[in-house]
Image 1: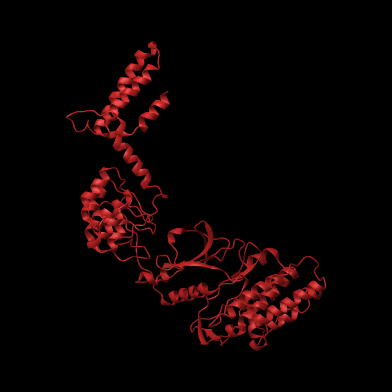
Image 2: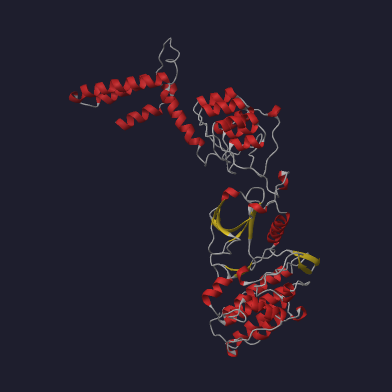
Length: 529
């Protein structure tokens, strides 16, 4: 009976409650017409007890009625319930599905919409309490903001972008609204989805009075320095632009150190390349960043690293690509040593297909110039993906010919570099075929050329003296025609090297012949063409 009686008590509509006639306007309210209904059901509740219990319960009932009457007369019950419900709804991310797009936007928002016309800035109908608060703060309506706060609206209510009324008022420069919100204990350092605070917004829009008030209260103002690639027109923001707050960066141990770091983007692991802040003022570094970004944006192939997006409108500037937990081919070679012929051929086809795609790009071919095991990544499915292209600064001579930018030189310890690059001559896409030949040799032999000589000595022998390392593995361990292909790839003269389209045809033929002859039985998986 206790549960049922009190359930009816709270569900009864106010129109069915007995009214109390009184000169006091408070007692004539529908809310306080609740009191006699409480007394009625309290009496029913007491009648369910026997006489020995009644005396004790009667005292408790009187205290209960006095307590409820007192709370209703002061309005504390209504206000506490209203405040609690309003606060819970204002902080519910499922409910905050609306973006406040009126007026000035966050100082760090890459897509800053045009401010609304002040003459037309009237409160629309059917807005929830949070949006009403933000709208009144945007309009500078001190009285309206105060009335909403008195009704129990949470002063720190946020929209979809995490912006509070203090953010809005700071953007618009409404000093009195800012003072009111601060007096109601607004979070002075609340950050929106882009990381901006009210103080940063006030500073960005030149609202000095608001900025000084917030700084005097100890507010923090994040640096909002523009990036060298920041655009003035929001419509010019590139489609690949990512929200930096969606990236959680941590140090890398599985990909190229010094270049990329492991991060999480919307719960997915990605590789992030961060441009050093001291390079923002260096035009050459910015141009190199733009060049790499342009190349990554336009390539799409199963054997080429996948571009995810970039951060160019916020600091730090970043390039985001797919992440491969198995690392690069260099680490794999170091762990495994010499590959079986079947694996070497499968990997060779992956590299050749990726490079052929880059060389056939339109309107101009993409010459890698830095093809080496460190720039070839291994995905979770055992497939290789070419990366690291676009990092070497080139001076284009013709659409298919280039040379190193004046003032730069090849790494003297890079054993994969072609002779014409090492000697600073004009070169074409055949330099990548040379590097491919060295990689294929290393996969078959398990060691680098001329091991254990130093890399510098190896480069001198191969690039200047035109010498080639001996094949130490027995001839019967090589598939037919594979040695000849390696010799042609690292030919001293560019005209003697095959193109990657020719390399793919020859590798496919080698695989087919070995499969027909049962050369490696069931140990080889026929690569997908």
